[in-house]
Every structure is written in C-alpha cells, then in structure tokens.
Amino acid sequence: MLTLRAMQSPPPSRRVVLLAATALLCAAHAALAQPPRSEESPAARPVPASAAPQSYAPELVAAGRARFGANCGFCHGPDATGGSGGTDLTRSAVVAADERGDRIGALVRTGRAEAGMPAFPALAEADLSAIVAFVHEQKTKAEAAVGGRRSVEVADVLTGDARAGRRYFESTCTSCHSATGDLAGIASRAEGLALLRRMLYPTGAGGAPARRPTATVTARDGETIAGELAYRDEFTVAVIDGAGQYRSWPAAGVRIMIDDPLEAHVAQLARYTDAAMHDVLAYLHTLR
Image 1 (cartoon, rainbow, N blue to C red):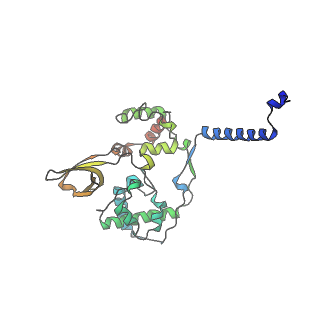
Image 2 (cartoon, rainbow, N blue to C red):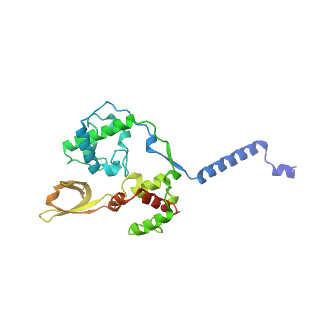
Image 3 (cartoon, rainbow, N blue to C red):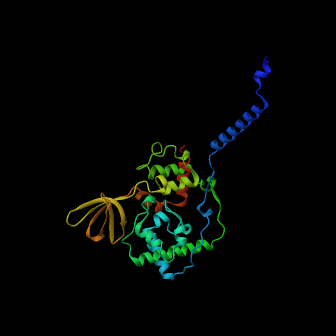
C-alpha cells in the first residue's frame, strides 16, 4: 500500500530531472528578461589582408574621395567604413581580393540589387579608377590601425537631455513622425547604438533603404517615364522603368521630379549638432 509520503515525493532520479529542468527554465527566463546592453562594434571585426599591396598617386586618391562621397558616401560612409545600410568597405572580402579594380569595378557596374546597391553603368572610367584608389587607400589605413574597442554600451551613447530632445523632436520631426504613432514603443525594439543608427539612417528589412527613391523624368518630346532612381549626378539621370529597363538621359535635357523618403534625414544630418543628436536619442529612449 502507498503511504502519503510515497505519494507526495517523486523518486530520487525523477527529482534530479525536475530540478535540472527547473534550473534550465529559470536560466532561460533570466536570459530572455535581460535585454542586451551592448552591441558589437563594426571595429571589432578584423580587417582582412589585401591580396596584393597597392599604392596610388595622392591626387588620384583625393579625386576618388570626392567621387566616392558623391556616389557612394551615403550608404558606405564618407570614409568607406560604413553608413546607411552599406557595409564597411575596409573590411570587405571583395575589396581585399581586388587588384586595381578588377573586382570592385565589376560590382560597381552591375550593382547588387538583393542588397539594395544600385548599378552605375554610366560612371566614367576615370571616376571609377579614382574611387578604387580611394577605397584601397582607406583599407590600407584600416590595416595599419591598432586597437579598437569590442562593444558599445548603451550608456556610451545615452548622454543627452531627454527633455531637450523632446523639444527638438516636436519642432523638427513631427511633420513625418509621431511619438504615439510610428515611433510608439521604438525603444523596446532598439536601443543604444542600434537606435542611433536607425535614427540617423532609417532602413528597412536587411539594412536596405525603407523605400528607394523614385523619379519622374519628362523628356523634351513630352514623354514621361517614371521608375526607381538608379543614378543621378550633375550630368546624367537614370531610372529603372516599369518594365525593368535601365534608361538614362543627359540631365540638362530633361525635367526631373524625385521622391526620396530619406531626403529629410539626409538634410537633417547637416543640421544636427552633437548635443542635439544625443538629446533626441535620449528622448527616443523614453518611448517604450
């Protein structure tokens, strides 16, 4: 006959299993309940060695800096170390394997649509060579750099005044954003460096732009073509039309209307002071 004690106490082996299961559940709950407090810095990734040492004339590198900034800087940063969804090119395997543009050139000409990178088939060969020189110069500097911190803590960037940030937000950002609408609970989804990146360079899934710019081009004969903006500088404008065709025109010979969802953010980058930027970030951290 079973006694009350026997009915209430599981066998020793079962007690061990139950205790182990309870410990695992508690550990899992603690891990889920504790939000990540730091994010790996891109500088923590090693710079791959170049396949072949390369050097370029200083004037070519200087020209490349200007061309890179105009065509590539928004995504990859003005110094090629990463920007709005674009990779850090000093740590790129393609750049490491490149020898005087044999790989970079092909990638620039064809683009990488799945990663949100447009093609630049109309880029002048001299401009492309200058960009290659600048990218390799930046990579050489990155290889020679020493140190590099391993993580960026939330407290490292959360240095602003949330009340000042709210005033700045309400005077500058509310024509497009709302603290109770699209940004409601934003700090529960991202914080620290990740939230700062999203604030400065809003992106969609996978780091691609939330929506790529579109353009409507009206030719001299009255023909109107609308599509995704593929390329634009002071001389040329190009779109990918509804049929998927790449079409380009001399900029001086057409009328162009561009709808860029990130235009306001690009303009805002030039207006931010360091204090205002961190004040707004501190305010966004209160939106949980």
